[in-house]
Image 1 (cartoon, one colour):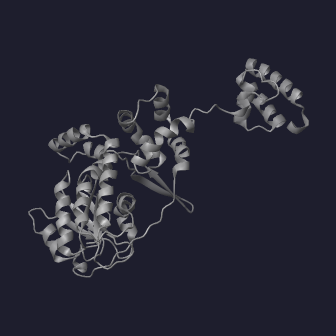
Image 2: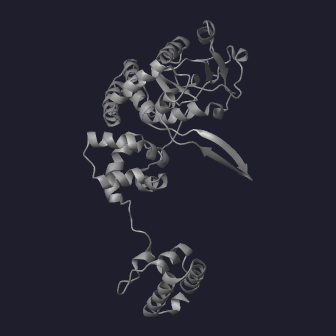
Image 3: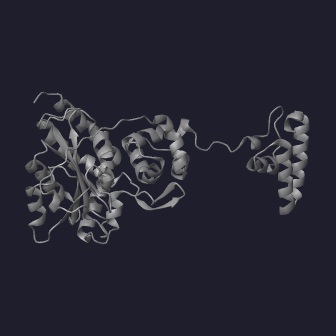
Length: 389
């Protein structure tokens, strides 16, 4: 029917519908919308905008209200602000980006330039889906690679982890990542990665090799940096964890630490730390070969300093709150994005003194300055990596 109307007839019919719609009651308005849908083939929302608008149509073109809402989120205005924040925060999804913007925008203004009040309000009001659409041109694809050798020593004496029912921080998943450049010959460095399941607080350390003593040394250093008491660790089946040195360290203490292990070849048993192997290790150190021992000290200084502070204080993460089955689909539900620092500050089992210490440190940090410092130190590490050992 819409194709048979001339432009003039179309505008006349719309004008009559608008006049009737303005005077009609709620029930009759619904009938008028049905008529507009039947006559012009509108979607119902488009019919509401077309018939409900009182603005006259421009000569020779459709009324602006028929074309849809005006664009509030202009990429030309917002993308120059979002781009440095998105890259400095290591390409978060729209939901995590929306959660970090309230804290990152003041840092951006302090670090770059002061924003117009309207731009700031629009960015803070933008939904996660809108932010995803805005940053879509910036996204790039990446590949992944990993490698783990299972160990057999003491394996049967360490139980396979079930579901930990204990609440609060202190329960860690641990794993190692090879910085081998594609050649696993044990003459390269490794990253030891540990993540707290409750808060997502993450500690990273580099080790010269995957020997038992070297890995244990880094595990001890990570425990000293944790802002909570270590209660349990869950590891893969590699020999760097399943050995007498590690068992003595965790078990021969006044309050032993519970040790469990994942099922062999079931990476999803350690899903938390496996995810950090990509987001916290590979995204920063890539797949290059690190075989210069002098690079280990530089990497550890970065992980204990700027990188660790940015990851734990300013980058929100999402935690799974539940899932259900609907036919053949699994529907997962996630909580609001929060930083590990925010989760620690609300945890009851973290001492008040430690919370005060963390808060004092947090107030001194600027995420944009930390991002710049990380890039400077990574360039130094890269220069050291290229020097033959």
